[in-house]
Length: 179
Image (cartoon, rainbow, N blue to C red; front, side):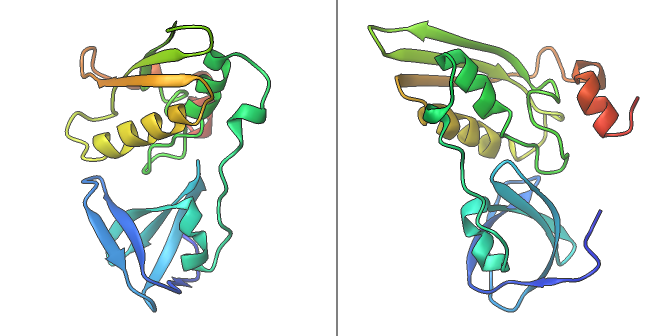
């Protein structure tokens, strides 16, 4: 749902068009409507388009800068932390994280040495033609790299089996009004 009042862009800020992922710059004075603020990013409606703005640029919207959690201060194994990080990645058009959406098919942590690990993630998109694929893959890679000991990352984007609503968690279905 869109906000009833517009937010004015305070400074030039980079954004990614949804769903193409094309980079654009929003200029100061541009009126936008915030539709979602999840997972360290804002989704805004501007001039008939949805765009994604990094949470670190919240000040450009006159909003809170969305800081990232220090994942290494959290308890748990590398795998636990990886799943925590994946739950902070959101489809920019759907207010549900990629894990609960059922977009992550596999997540493996492979020891390379004493405290070094390789991470292999297999994931998909809600639609094979979604241009946000590279953006989401990049976000997954970036968040995995933040975990101490992760030295290698491979994120494979697949479309077989194709995603469908049955892959969503019950929590996601409830959140989207599908239960």
